[in-house]
Amino acid sequence: MAENKDMNGTNEQDDKTLTTRQGHPVSDNQNIRTIGNRGPATLENYHFIEKISHFDREEVPERVVHARGSGAFGYFETYGKVGEEPVEKYTRAKVFSGAGKKTPLMVRFSTVAGAKDSPETARDPRGFAVKMYTEDGNWDLVGNNLKIFFIRDAMKFPDMIHAFKADPVSNVPNPERMFDFVSRTPEATHMITFLFSPWGIPATYRHMQGSGVNTYKWVNAKGEAVLVKYHWEPKQGIRNLTQEEANEIQAKNVGHATQDLYEAIENGDYPEWELFVQIMEDDYHPELDFDPLDDTKLWPEDKFPWLPVGRMVLDRNPVDFHAEIEQAAFGTGVLVDGMDFSDDKMLQGRTFSYSDTQRYRVGANYLKLPVNAPKSPVRTNQQRGQMDVRDPKESGDNPHINYEPSMLGGFKEANTEGRAPHQPTYNAAAMSAPIDRPNNYGQAGDTYRSLEDWERDELIKNLSEALAACNIKIQEAMIEHFTKADEDYGRRVKKGIEMKMIEMKEMKTGQVPGRESGQSKYGQGSL
Ligand code: HEM
Image 1: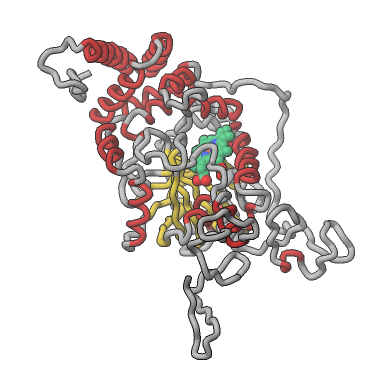
Image 2 (image 1 turned 45 degrees about the vertical axis):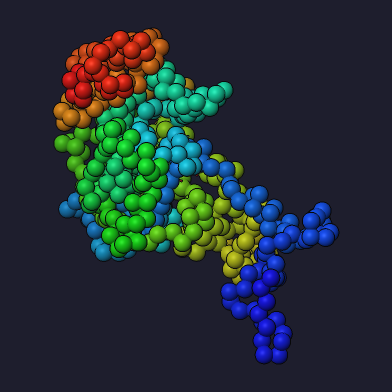
């Protein structure tokens, strides 16, 4: 029992005194109140019941994807230009105007499929979500490290994620499930090629690129739009891991990437990325052999160069992980004036999903939390709901008028003078149909050929090992996809699977003399 007595013998509380959430000083935090010192306990033990019942509610549901993550705060500094041109030619978004202007931001990096405390060495895309608190409200750029994606239609996302996660009966992770889905999803061949190469395991969050993946629009003051893709390039350089290196790290540390980011910032070694955009006319682009809105494709850099627009520095760690990182809520719908959605079907599906899940995961008033609230004024008639902690100022000078329009007061719509709306026009039937120009294999082959030799060797080794444990129908389908991308690719994976299967059989029967168990007979790079 801790008691501070002042000179007059009365209780004195200082700023270190433990209190309940009601503000009552806690004089005994060790013993529950009981009948006699052996129990039973009493029900009116308010402090204990408050303490334990709050603990029982400490966790919010983890994210359905990207549950494992870490984050930090910093700023974006605009160059005021797109390459050599004034940024206003393409967008009126204020976050990009005025060279040298800084906008505060926060970032959350993540893996995708694993649970909240899963290893950060997973072969998995990495999330790269940025929230900028701009003068015109929040802008979220919810991207990944890789520049493309597995699928191009939002309808497929829940199935894809089910296949990538553990078996729903046994809860055992099983790559056969993923390859089963992917073997029926030819557009995933390109992403699988990146994912099973060393690009599938970035060494740390600081050493990876970021990309918006989906196509957005930039809109200028005249209402004219261009298509735009965003890319982050780490000033620290890019570093990826081989599977062996990842296994070594994972044996000792399942949170190495979080630790690396946190310690770098604590040590004043602030990570930095440069932001580039690729710009394309808002058009069907019949000259391309793919649809520009297809997120399984890269936009060729020789035709659509990377143009620098600014840089991001992360210089502050969270003060509370749960409040600032776990409860952070990003969404693809969170755009500012001067930006718009493209017709990219994935982007459109995503835009519903994020705020929908956040209303469930964090609560209806998730935008009231400091990490999610904009730093620009909020004046809204959206009100009430659980945990409504509105600042009375949000209700304006006349809080009686919580509707719009009104002649008696309340908020008015924004003045759009000098900001012509962007109004795309459509003339097509509503339908459920795949896009034209799927070209599922062309860029997968280009990417395969563009890898360095050691990266290609790793790719073949990783794919062969994973596929050797799969059903033969899945193996055959995957070999067919790889062969269509590049004959050498298919041939090497086929041979790699065969060799791995022999090896697995031999290990089972123990028929191989002179070889230590678990050691590959073929060595790295010999496939
Ligand atoms: C997180 C849905 C595709 C990047 C999430 C979450 C959902 C979701 C429900 C959890 C959000 C939360 O709990 O706060 C979808 C759907 C997709 C899709 C329906 C396709 C139709 C993508 C793509 C990317 C991506 C293509 C990469 C560009 C992310 C990132 C996060 C995330 C980075 C984590 C954000 C954070 O750190 O809080 N997604 N996603 N997603 N998604 Fe997607």
